[in-house]
Length: 324
View 1 (cartoon, rainbow, N blue to C red):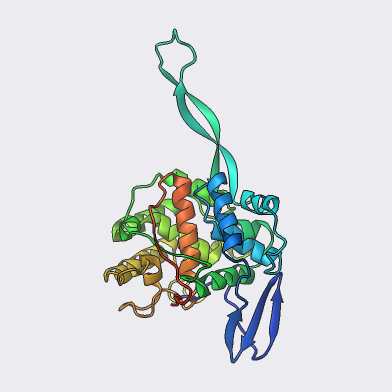
View 2: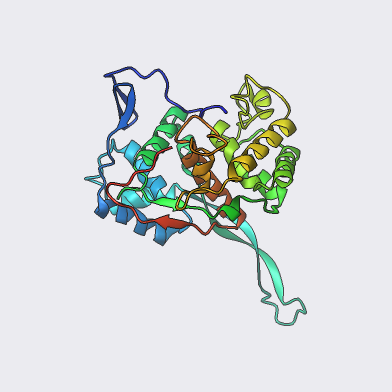
């Protein structure tokens, strides 16, 4: 499988690289990031602001965005600034709702009305909209991965049942990717869904992988049609294995099924298990940040579809870290 599109390569020993507020120090060929400086008093403000704004937003996403925008300096962060950042992580859309019919004389008890509703956005959505590069997005995932299980970031566990096949309205999935300028047609989405059904894999997970691997393939990309044939980067990459969407979707779904055939160890999130080198079927991608991005996008899709995932969390400790 291909490593995430945003992987930083060509690391040079002893070089310090500045990436729009994130500082990466290369020592001995190892990528080391500066610990997020926002302590519990700051992270609690992000958590509270998210709770008061839209609970389906992952509070760690606006926190990571401000890590970049403020050079990892949270000392002067005000509540209005935090709120402004959190507000970037949702958009208001009109959705049909059944409401009581105001005409009491009518036999029709309810009517359909378009009402505004907040829909969450993922970290990929927001960083892309703000013009950050794939490398910068991947750096954000790297920081989250580095500090998972610490007092900064909490490990979460998605019940494996959510990764099994779920019946989803293909039009809803199409609208999700279409809003992100994806080259995917409705027929393409249905092809991916069929692969998910055949191998008992949630189509939302497959779509999330295309988001992490290729940002849902924006139609403006020069090679969009070629990438569309293998948006999962099976057999290393779409360049090396340019096939049909049906073939690559079948291979990706079959690969996921194989990796999930062995249950993850107690306490390990199944999406991380898919990319764990200790998995008997190996890791899906070479990029250790891959599961963080896939998970963030997957949860965002499920929220968009109106089927939010009930996750559990692992109590963070100062010494515990998670790596894959």
